[in-house]
Image (tube, rainbow, N blue to C red):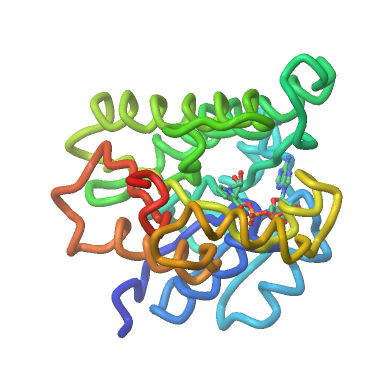
Length: 248
Ligand SMILES: NC(=O)c1ccc[n+]([C@@H]2O[C@H](COP(=O)([O-])OP(=O)(O)OC[C@H]3O[C@@H](n4cnc5c(N)ncnc54)[C@H](O)[C@@H]3O)[C@@H](O)[C@H]2O)c1
């Protein structure tokens, strides 16, 4: 299907994990993709594989760099139809009182300030029918020990989504996805290990009724649906991509 032919999509955090899958899925559906990431080499490698895609370097926590990302997209494609505000970082999993203030501030800037800045930079250039989608987390709705500041940042992403949806309707729809745990580089940063031990993996999966962790493709499918015409009446939706984790 070419549902996004002629549309221009910005994907932040495109060099890895969910962002790469989101960029790939939109490109498969005919979109022109701006692969944006703090890791320029990684973003370029993704763009090089996708027809008509471009790459740019951005630190999503920085205001000027958000405006530069938007300008680069307008220069390349002449329009912006969807901002996928996906880039985010965990802090190293730990009880909250052991998370350093520096870790907290940086994580909050990358996960929350980025959505505020990305939306501010994009909205003047977005026409009727465009949308902003961000990657929150099921942890933003259902806490558990060890990731409290991170989960709070994702609760903030959820509230930003709902508030922006109310403010930007009917011109721009604003939604987010709330994934459950997925084996991306995120694990490496949160737990210091890329491959969970079999015991840890089993423990995570035991809390997911569908019996597995999320894949980047699960998240990309939700993004494309939320951006599509089929979702044209959906705004302020925080879509759980969690295999039933939140009902367990
Ligand atoms: N993997 C999970 O278990 C999981 C679950 C729920 C939500 N999430 C969220 O999904 C999103 C994507 O994470 P992922 O799992 O694909 O992780 P990942 O580490 O594989 O990818 C994150 C990407 O974001 C980029 N990035 C980091 N800081 C940046 C910055 N300041 N500016 C621009 N780019 C930056 C990284 O370079 C990387 O390419 C994040 O918002 C994360 O919080 C992840």
